[in-house]
Image 1 (spheres, rainbow, N blue to C red):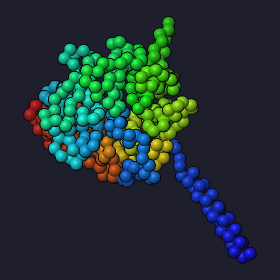
Image 2 (spheres, rainbow, N blue to C red; image 1 turned 120 degrees about the horizontal axis):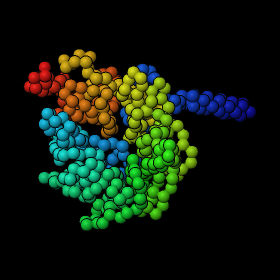
Image 3 (cartoon, rainbow, N blue to C red; image 1 turned 45 degrees about the vertical axis):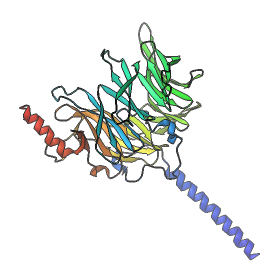
Length: 415
């Protein structure tokens, strides 16, 4: 009898403790944002606490982060873009570099008006301005990274947007308003037309489906109505479902991740199940607005801004919890390194990309106007991080870049 009473008491106490634990967990999981000043710095690993293997680790995805444009990582190498050329012109050519993730020497693979890197198999792909130099008519090119002497190969002319999955390239040709797919593994394969869209803002391939943002414009006597439509298509185009339709200025950026589609709406990050249904808010900032975001390794990386800060970089879990401050970007004060936070003009930061270890930025130099590629570590105390600048074929400290900027300005008689 005594044993039974003790046993029942133990069960009751255990039940109460479980309930209290659940209450504490729920109260700790807030989805609203917090002021950047109150955030913890991103000092721990990027992986989730339960170490789940994401479906995004599928080898067919090739490690590409859909919204990245200037950097891609595959196996033990990092591929990235950096502007090079005559400083008198500033906005000249872009070089494609390959570098070991272990920070081995960077090797230039190509140079030209290059953008939008992706990897597939042994190749790195990109868009490049063709010889005709017709605006918005680009060539899809690739380079075999396994050969001793990598050479550029033109895969397809007239490509405006593209996305890779496994050995397939999906691309949109603005000239005939058509979406195609091309088998990259079959020599001489012909493109297959799978859909028609008059105007596309985004294209992302994922296995047996493709996501696109179509821009639809209706002109009326007194106004022009522009709508963003997010479509899900089967890989062969036989199935086409509308996930959502919103005013053009309300919805921007999409990224599929696991079983959801994430997007920015009304300056907050939201998501909707890939099968459709109602959307839910994942993260609503407090005192800031969302400018852009990327998802990598089960974390959302966001660029936020406020009336006083133009570039606040943060990360969080997929449900908006565990928000961490990566960096708040400021322009440099002088060329001597005092009170310096960055080498770029904060009013002219063009894009940010994410790798396993770095936040990668591209923008205009604060001093001499040239376009720079820089990087900042993701982990560590935000205020203690040091930005590095890629120039003269290597990643160098801000101090080194300031000395280079002084040299250039002096040589031009500007200092």
